[in-house]
Length: 410
Image (tube, rainbow, N blue to C red; front, side, top):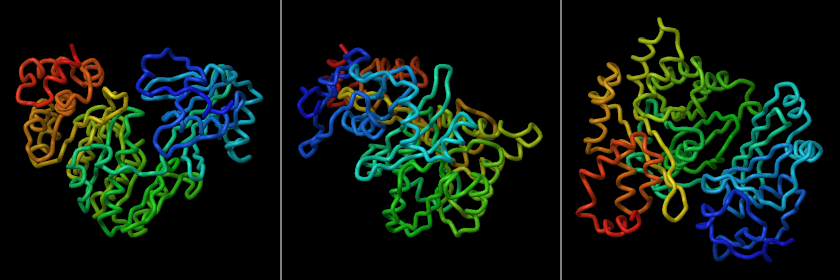
């Protein structure tokens, strides 16, 4: 069956559907110049599944033995009914398609594997293979070949100033799937377009591929270009970097090496899995033994430039947008971080006129601009009660979009 012969469906309607779709419901085009002609195979290859995922603007593809393939579209997992369930034989064929013999041996031994695959002119995929109770599984995260800009993502403009620092530590935090990697990529793009620097990235696996423009960009993948993450990080300090990008701060040794880099004249960007910008310091300090925690906390607070905490919220036009905490490590903020004065820190972030903000401010502004509805706002808010108080006490007066917003939320 050719996908171009199927009926159109606007992506705005996906959230109104059940979790299952027919192939005939797949959208055929996503722009004036978009044409897709390859068939949807009922027993597909990984490449065919990825091509279809790109067509329907899926962010992730889930494959399990005994299950039909599922596509994550605008936050929801969708099943295409006509696909066959994945048998063990089909799954093994998938592994042979995307993994080398040595990678399949590693998967058999370790029961999980991270890698990536590139489809020229189409998309890059970050891949995780693993074993489960019912058989093997694969999750592919689709990564656009086009690196978005800070402006295109509608991120706060202060990020441009933050990433322009010559040294220190910048952290992007949030839950899995909150767009941290994309935000970091946009910040790297800003450097690459505006500064003459050497940027080294250490990733497992590489996500966005950054061509060198004004900057010389050196990208290294664990398993392909280095055997060990921490070894690559230590080596990076001897490779004349200006900026070091670490995929994630995972353990004590990585934190210590990153602090060394940040305190010796390098700018370091990394991600952490925390929902709150303020809480990231304690999260990293708690990776250490109790007798080491205070000295590490001092080092971390001295090195920190800023923390950008991020969540994604569904918009009224059925897209996703980022909302952010922005914590900038001013002298006053350093004192609050050192003494765990969270309430004072949040008040400082909210009242600051130089770029700091709390996430509820960003959510409230999105409500005022009629970009999101109240239900989605409350779902993503780190403090729904505070958001409701903000709406009741401040209202919508003085904003041209107020009537539109109120009508939408009736």
